[in-house]
Image (tube, rainbow, N blue to C red; front, side, top):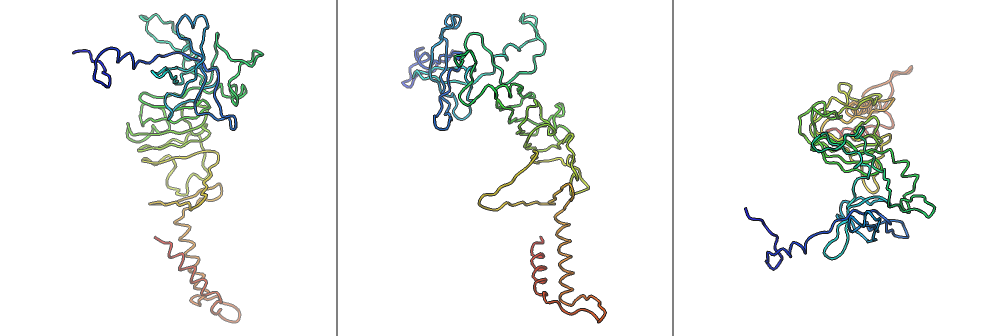
Length: 346
């Protein structure tokens, strides 16, 4: 098979076409984040220090360039003193993509004696926000390392405990530096996940959550949304009081497509129009005091209104010392209530 060469727009096949489309790649460290002075926001532009050769790197000889996100639709804005991979295009513009903290490389080990790589212990926990450098550091003039205008050392210290999310084979993960993530995964009986109990293997799952735990746990996550397709869900140590208004089923008994939303508090806010809840089957609300099935509630309301209407219309009477009661003065109102309730019945 002949080697294929990408030709230019004119159709030539010489190697100069390859050279003109080649990208220079550098290892860079962030010197400054270019912010809007009014609101301290950024469109992704940074000042980055790059060493153009290995010799420059060893001599700590860096040049400053302005770089833009490689993908403006999906990027992480780095912090000062963090590492990026920098690409230079043929228009001499520089673009960057964020890379893991430097301690990630220190923790890699491969159990293969042929590679002659030393095996290290405790390599699983990769901190998301841990960065330390020997040669390149931006400081405030008093040897205090800085991270940016609105990214303080206190924030970095508070989130230094955040570990990279753990994933299973085939998963895709999007995670931020503060302890939030979106994971694209599936039901797999071989994986210990809250959705691994019942259902068909291979069915898709999306897990959106905030919290510092590396694996999903509704008990410890601060807030979460799980989108399941054919699975049950294990709520762990969460206690429901009562668990459900439908006393015949428990929360983890259902197997099928479902959305589970959880947090210490949920707020639904409609700014300009209605909030609508529609169910093919039951709608129930449970509190610490009441377990309400809306079908049962409305049946009882209808029955109560019907009895009240009968009393007011004289169809039913109350016996008093002087004889039965007559027709109530609110007969028309009671009849209207009964009619409106009957109109809600499906």
